[in-house]
Length: 389
Image 1 (cartoon, rainbow, N blue to C red):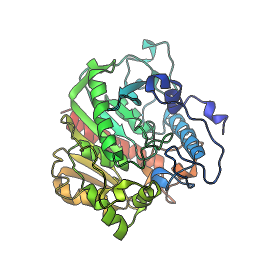
Image 2 (cartoon, rainbow, N blue to C red):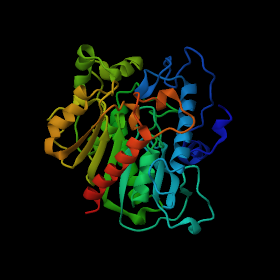
Image 3 (cartoon, helix red, strand yellow):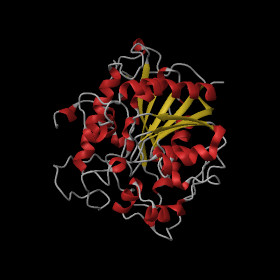
Image 4 (tube, rainbow, N blue to C red):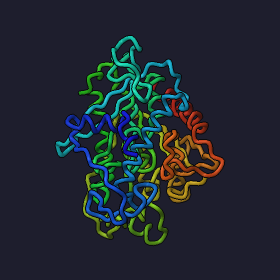
């Protein structure tokens, strides 16, 4: 496994440039029961959205799997035409505490001859000049414990279709660092980081002149789906969490208990308000977590079109207590896709040769690569209809 870690995957690009991103590289620990997490908790063999918490070595496995995803995308399995020039950079945005966080940026590139750099492991051109102007922006928010390349195939598909795509590495809630997982401000922090990512791309990123700051969309999976709904105007009732978790426990409740989250308290400390981003004109949400906090009143502020995806075999974020709330509250505003035989992790990018079970196992008979080719095309169509016209 250590040998595989030497390959140039996007997360490793992030780590190697952490002077820019402001995040120290973690060492890889050997597996051991009771390994201690970065927030001081004792980790069980699962983590983030697929378990209570993964040991640190499993985070390294996540990076390996993301490498496989990148190689898989380069091979063309994502449906992105290999000849389409796509550029890639790691930018550095600044959070409210003054600390930097990394943002992966994909975008239409001027062409293979525009830079001495060849295609990287994703099939993108590192630091190539941006092609075009007035380009719409899509921000991708990964799920709990994910990373900037969790949806690399979608990022490549959107960039090849004429979008700038920005994927922040949510501080304290990614595969290398779970230090915010037990915080009352975890979700309000995610909301803020998406808004700051938008601000960075349209005002500070070196390719900002090519971006149309009034044509912005967002995509998110699981906790990321919840996050982008808040950026679109949702005001979740977080006070519903303790009662729901005591009466109808589900996966997120296990995660919050593991981290001793104050969100389970009957009187949780106040968190930063969730704020909408006024220029977000459309969002795509896959298997949104904490859906039971999204009452009709909570979703009344969502005025933009929503495309919603839910797996019929998702036992981590079940439809009945999550996506159903969004469907019933938004009604005609939502374009709903129920995916037969899909599990929760089926929405992560297809895996390549490094088939890590925690990330890459789908219900029997489910073809993740074929599904993503269809889903990516539908996401591009939805954003085209709402951001390009």
